[in-house]
Each structure stands twice: as structure tokens, then as C-alpha cells.
Length: 550
Image (cartoon, rainbow, N blue to C red; front, side):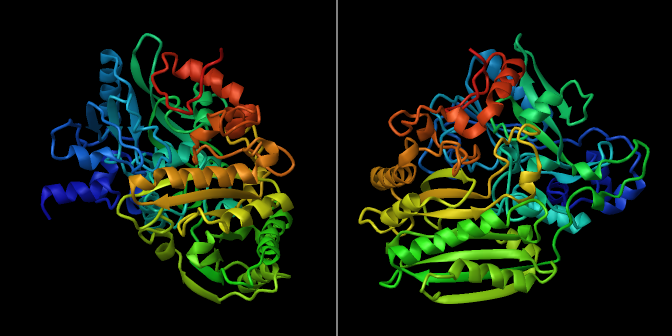
């Protein structure tokens, strides 16, 4: 192996002991020996690399995951360390250039591809994952994909995070927006395990520095930590590192021995999965369809309290437009939970009850946990050459109303939708609901599901038709509350990691409830104060950016 290959392995967390110790992020064998050792300076890092128009790399680095949006920055700065980020942000401030930050590139809107952005920071080389003995927590850099995070934590320590099911999403924005996934009903949101964050911020005088903020009660920067527990990416600065440790695993004393394998939730050994499919034929009447969706919602109303034996079960009901011909229910749970097979059978039976329509197929399988969790392309938005999509969302405290279910059926049966359009009802709640709404910036803590509305297409010429369909669908479902999921008995706003600029457009939001209430509810005034403190010059902004107090 030549030196460049060795560096690649070290940077990706498959670390030789010496290289890992130098980074302060240790492999398990080294962690026991060096638990009390100080964190040493980082080794020479990748970059920085400045890529400008005309460079053969420019077009390849330009696009994020959603090909609808393409900016034209003067420079793409590919960075590999916190110091490089500090220098890049300093350059942007001094030159007066608008700056944006990209880690995994999966933003649903044009936050990093806005034509006003002149300097795009690419954090993808910053992808180290490992154990930091100095902070007694696991360190994750923002460019690490979720699949890389899962693999490294599992192989090294047998632990995991309750993060998302798309393995190619970057940790950077996913964590800052709250983060959730298949294990969240059992273990809460990602930010419920966030111990500290390193953020490059800009002071009122234009000075740029890196600040570490922790959840420790006496930390003078604790409010910056809180801002990153659901405040969304690109609002306060550039996150260059996260540290994660579950609150119930906090060491009793600074000098007490620490077993890293006890600091985060244990990874399941294996997952029991089930796939159930229905066809869009004459038997799938409105009554059958709405009964199916209502059953799914009612089950989650009854089985999503913290500590419920069913919080280990995670399900997504994904009805597509009828032109697709069929739609699916996917279910997964830890195969070692007591009576796992029985829990799964009871759930599927509850969803099917009273529909009068048998599934076209039903299959279940048990697989080692790591394989389905990191399978490339899992839940990615379509296998199309040019990925263009629009995502809209809403939190649910209970099942959709009868009128809303009728609207879902109506829009999935109309003549204007296509086979890649549809919605997802995603199981949520459980341990997420055990945390008070003000303890983190994630305000929606008494919800049981997330609803996701989506359409995916290939060509720019199809933009208008797809956007009109999904916007009309969403407005129809929330017709009684001004076209958006206003917090109330049924809905509870939306999720900032599913940003939707339509919520700030009075043409599509006629509720009189501002977009920031839909995303942050009563936590928004505090986030505004923190915006004024940590980004007083308004360096970090986008179409749904937090604004300082008026």
C-alpha cells in the first residue's frame, strides 16, 4: 500500500493505531490504552482545493443531490480541516462573498445552489468517525455519510445512532436538523445523543473562529449547542465536528473509566423485515384505501408512548400514484426483541383489518443488521439519470382525518400524477416523545408519524407539471388549515430537514401562520436570539434561514 492509500484509509476511519491516535479519534484497541491521553493535533489534512469555472472538476462538484438546482459560484472550496474552514470563511467575509456549506448535498431546496452564493464550501473530505477519549464521546465530522458512520461505529464498538435510512446522506445537515430514522422510536432523535459541536462562527467585527459548545450546564457556549439540536444547517456557522454520547451514559466523574461501547445505543444484531404490497386494481376502492391508511395511523396513536413494547417497530406505508400499479408497506424491528415475530404479525394484521383487500404479496426476512442498514441506494430518490424532485412534509399527532384521507385517495387517483409521485406515512414517536419540546430545538415532541409527499422526475421539461401536482396534492390535504400543516389536534407543523420554500410563499400558505412557526413552533424566538449572538453579520443565510429579532 502506498502512502496515499494509507492516508485514505486513515481518513475514513479504518485506522492504523498510530494514525488514529494522532487524530484524537481512536480505534477500539487504542482507546483502552489511551483513555486518559490528551487529544493531539490533527495530522496534515486534505486540501484546501479551490475549484473555479473552467476547471475540469467544476461541473462534477457543482450539483447536489437534487438536480433541479444548480448555482454558479465563483469558487468551490474543498476543505479537509477546521483550520481550512476558518480560512475559507475568513476569505468570504473579507471579500464580501456570499458563502454556503455542503456536506452530503442532499438538501431538498436550493440552499447551497442559490445563484447568490459565490463561495461554496465542500466539506465532504471531512469524514472521520471514531472515539475521542478527551471528550469521552464519539466524534463525527460533517462529511461522513450515514452509511460510513454506521459501519465505523458498528465495526469498532457495536454501537449506533438513531439516524436516517439513506446511507449516502451526510451527517452535517442531517444532525443539525434533528435527525431521525428506523431506531428513533426506540432511542429518540439523533440530537438527543448530541454531546458537543464544533462550529466556525463569524463575530460582529468579522473575526472568524472555531467554537466548541457542549451540553454541560456550566458551558458558556451551551446555547450554541442547543441551536444545533434541531435548528437546521446553515444558520449559525459551519459545523466541523459533532461529538455524540447518550445522556444516560454520561460518566459519573471526570476520572472514572469509560467503556466506549456503552456510550451510544447498541446496534441490533439482526433486523426482522417485512414487505407487504397491494395492487391498484378495482378492489382498492376509496373505502379500502382509506381504511388501510387510517389503520396505520390509529396503530401509531396507540403504540407510540415512550416505553411501549412496540416502539422497537418501525414502519413506512408508501402509497404511490395509481399509475405505478402497486404500493408498499415496509416494516423492520430488532429481531432479538421479545416476541419480535409476533409483534410484526400483530402490526400487519392491524393495518390490513377491515379493508377487504388481501395484499398481492407479503414476505419477511431476517438479515444481519449492517447489511440492510448500509445497502447502497436504500431509500434514495429514484434511479434516474437526472434526479429532480420536490418533497413536502408534515408532522402528525394522530391519523389523518377522514377528509384528509379522501384527499390523499383523490390525488393518488387523478390523471395528472405519475408513477414516481406519492406519499409516505412514517412511524415516529416513542422515545422521541420522552424529551420536553424545549430541551432541544426540535419542538415537535408529541407526534406519532411524519407524512412525506414527494414526486420525482428526470427532465427539466417536466418541472412545471410535477411541481403543480405535488403542490396541489399538499394543499388539498391541508385545505382546512390554509394549505399547510398548522399545529393543532392532528398536525404539528413540519420538519426542517425536509425544507419546503412553499411554506413561506403566501400563494401556497394562506393560513396566516408563518413558516418558522410550522418548523420551530415556540422555539423560534430563542433561535432568533441565538442567531443575533452567533451570526450578528448575517453571514449564513438561505431561503428559510432563521432571522434575528426585529
